[in-house]
Image 1: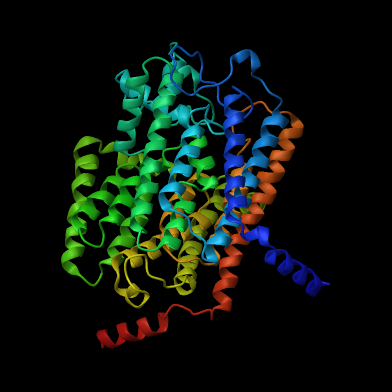
Image 2 (image 1 turned 180 degrees about the horizontal axis):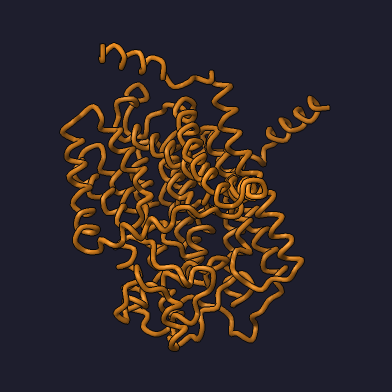
Length: 518
């Protein structure tokens, strides 16, 4: 029976439609069209309420009298749209593996159009953009968002922007770096006392870096048309990223754009590469993994290593040493959380029943670091060595860009797969360097992971859903999605085991240390 099922599966994979790029691109376009229509339909269970509109600026949507769509209609449409988009991505990916490529600028133009359309309607499913607006508003009225929370203000007096924030982060001070805070202040200044207008500027600050990332990926892969198609497909034309990053107006693209620019300069200008990764660290400290990857790429050239360090130190010292030193400590507030849908959530619940919540939480957070190291090692043994465009495969182990891109994929994948707190929009930091590398099993694993995380948070707002919707959402997020995240880690382990299950050379390292001491 199993052999018959496998034979049927392989016949299905051999079908022509599974490698038809026109079909795949059509499905991606249809997926984004559904998202745009739901956002244009107005505030609902999945689309945010931004308060009164006092200008002609986007986001655009139908008048409020058409709002309040049935929760099953809007959520169901988004579940369908996300699934269709991932299916289209998978079809295009299979075609690209077989050698399909298209003019890079045409693909980029398609992705840019879909991305822009997504940012012209209401943000959806996450109220994070409202918190960005709130932190900007606090700065605009002379408050420090690292010390003062939005709730401290609007509970004492009416504020036309802060009043439209949503739970659960209203009592949380900012955890973002100085450059992110500056972007929030700028949006609040440009938008004035109207949440709708502030959100438009925040959407623009999500869109523009996202497009720049796509342009950089396009440029860095220009020497290989097939790889260039892959790079565009995994960045600006990726329906998972358009949905997770842009539909929610998250600041992940602003975080990553400086690091990606740093990668672009890595082969020739180490000082500029360092400035890029340093600027990235002033948005979010999670970009430390890219910094480690760049250092590893230069590990055999101390001059370039020194220039990279000097370049990174300049913006980091200015931002955290002089401009906003409290921002570095603020980032620590974001550690220790466990997100629903992650592998850790069901483990924490089960252990809490036996050992109590504090002990279970301590165990889960510490085990996650051990798991991260293990997964990183396994990926380092299994991820193929293929040169990034611009050098021959025989030179890939000496090419700083190939080493850095491969290391960034390994570290960020290991971190996000094992972190107790993981969300779909975080995956942007994996997809960009992954697009520069050759196809591997990791591609489909990340598609599967991103699909369920995206589906899980369609109903992620603190909204008054019906009991039936809450039950369905919990089943998707807390059961299926959490199970998928565990299965994804298991898939990495199986991949490593089948590739020879090489262990770290700990015995050799210990022996060498003992010889040195003697």
